[in-house]
Length: 284
Ligand code: AHG
Ligand code: MN
Ligand code: MN
Image (cartoon, rainbow, N blue to C red; front, side, top):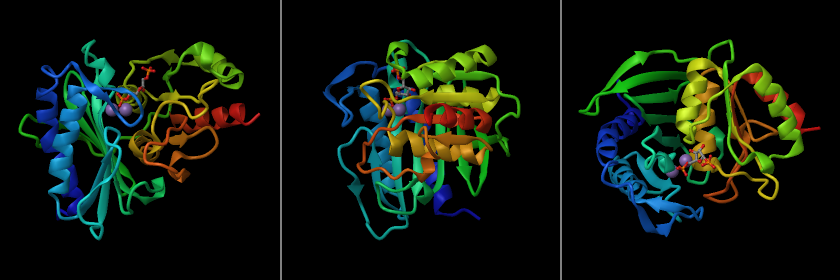
């Protein structure tokens, strides 16, 4: 039996082929910046406008927010769900023709909300093939997205491999804190480096091969780069539902409530053993 969350997932799946088809001709920067002060590609704005239109068309969706917009777009404050999206994650990879994705979280409270208010989240990965990973009801599925927007499930129960293999950490190494750099010295002796510049692509490596991904707080930028509502919460919900863990350096990202819509956060997701060691290292 299909429910309102299925309607939201189907809308994202149906929009993804149009986003992908629209990438080739939208590799130039717009004149404006997003609310995080970052340059916007035409593709960022295009994906954002498609998602806003399709998601707000759903009766059960009362509002839409994205990293590309200053404010929440409110449609029906009494509706059941509220969707936050990173319409194109890793959009700087478009010029170099590398992986990127669409990331979303479905909240049962108005935005900004706590990660514990998520009822579903997921991402579309524009890789050699287009796939969609969805977390809901404590489980994670992976599907191949067809050109007509239909989903062919290829993994009913996606879970993090027991054996961690890869790691990827963002930010400039000279700006890493000493505690974090000391932790990475251990990790790089144990795992293989995989860092592609799009969180969704890098996290999908972790979901596939096991390990840890992060974008730490930096010297002079303790909040790091990634946004709690649009990147931290939805990706943490996926990885925790897949048997992994998440952290802002101290606690699960799902236990972090943003003060503002675009609040940034240090972000780590992956193998629970590595997350525990990270929190010990940063808590020293
Ligand atoms: P977005 O394109 O949505 O702003 O996301 C980019 C983010 C994230 O995808 C990635 O992990 C990180 O920026 C890469 O940052 P660096 O370019 O500093 O490595
Ligand atoms: Mn992003
Ligand atoms: Mn983005």
